[in-house]
Image (tube, rainbow, N blue to C red; front, side):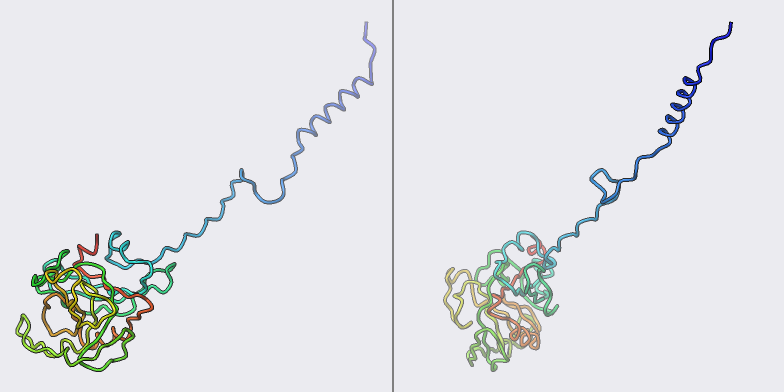
Length: 249
């Protein structure tokens, strides 16, 4: 016996098959707008902050000892702890955010006959290591255009011979007092010694005479004139001096 046909059931089945296939083929619309945190798009890297330029050759301890107010530094680097040859460079820090830049130099220089010391005493023939203010200048010759107070005096005359037999005449034609064991604001000729006479004094930057000094730093005459025109009291200039190993601390 044959079963009766049910056309309406077949139509419903066919309709469901069509709907099911169509639903499986559809894709959701693509998202619009900016990529979210789950996106694989790479984020733009943040720019690296600009670091202030440091003075080459100075270690972290020495750099930290330079006062924030200082805007000029004469850096005198000795060839070794017992050497009397060195090099001088003047650095300027006009914008603390940018750091230091070389302003003049490098210049050849001499220092104490026996080199450098962390504890200078009178007669040891060594230059003191450290950071010292530069506030006063002077010399036997007229002021070449110094910005620091300049004391022109005939008492800056000197004679005799240096350690290598070279003449000392003219060595004090131009000088800048280094504020080691002295009172700032006075002529370089002032002999007041706050630390006592046994700690020495009269440590200057002066004209080079072609040989080592008793403890001073010396530069060629033309460089001394240039330095005097550049050192600016409103920039609180200092000298940072010592052998390379000491300055690298």
